[in-house]
Length: 383
Ligand SMILES: Nc1ncnc2c1ncn2[C@@H]1O[C@H](COP(=O)(O)OP(=O)(O)OP(=O)(O)O)[C@@H](O)[C@H]1O
Image (cartoon, rainbow, N blue to C red; front, side, top):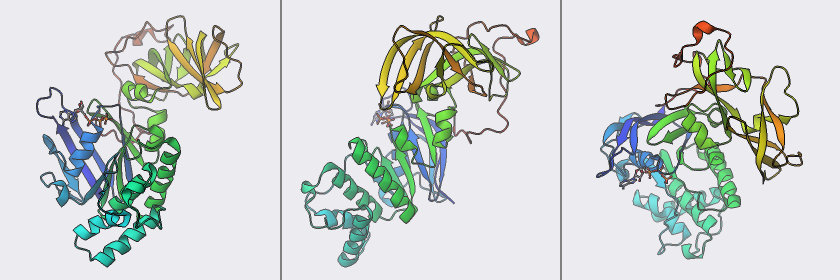
């Protein structure tokens, strides 16, 4: 069953030029978790608010369990929303906060306190029932807020960056907790987040950029096979190699690389920094280019080197710490063997003249790409 469905949601705030959301559609099956990611100002919170009933979309419809709720206010929808700030009630103790929603729904005091205890146990805060909320740490307060959201026992839980104010250790603890809550209660969740590691908690990720849904797929697919250059740039860590695809081979100044792309024409090869190597000589069957190291930075047990190729391309390579990489060093950057991920170049991309082409008849610039026949990314909600 589909728990939540957004059907071509467009929203334009009064007095603004551009819509905050344009024709975004997505469905979340019951018991599943969707993460919504995108740059700041891309429309993520607006999407969540439209699902919650906190904004009335300019057009489009919201369905909960198959019922059109577009015109219902938040309190009449089967949803709970949790925000970045815990916004607990200061005049109530911890249990009073968690028991608030069941009390509002008509539960007797005893029953509401029992539910509060249950959800405080689940978020691993037993024994704190009687504590004033002013005496809680940030992490504890957010756990209480989660317990309170769960105690409302609504079908869909909408989380708007709930863990982004926590330090990384507390955030990881909250991620574990989300896993435990899912195992115990099987709720339908929508999580808005900036954090791509956090997005990987979800069954699927919806990438929203400038109000448009670019990709709807499992996190691993978004990470390795971004559906657009905008998604790749948002993720970071990709080297873009412009060129031309002919008969499944991408031709560029890096060489010839088999690609996972059905179609012909200008295309950008996307090479992840973890998939590139530095070598003194290119190996047959791979592609590579000579480049000079311009920066080097350490990330935990890895080192990220930035290089510049003669044509001006910036390349990022991630290597094990301890690999000898010196700024100023000239080296060969190597990728492959493929197939690699490539995207049709959009009109906005500058595509330099390709290298030697085996098929002169196919030299037409701007050739049209066909649809991928079996798209491993899953359906794209809206491009
Ligand atoms: N109440 C409002 N009135 C006018 N414009 C708004 C309002 N709320 C949001 N916007 C605009 O709508 C766009 C999308 O905002 P939204 O808050 O949904 O983005 P977001 O992706 O959640 O951003 P962030 O990650 O920074 O929270 C932005 O351009 C924002 O400035």
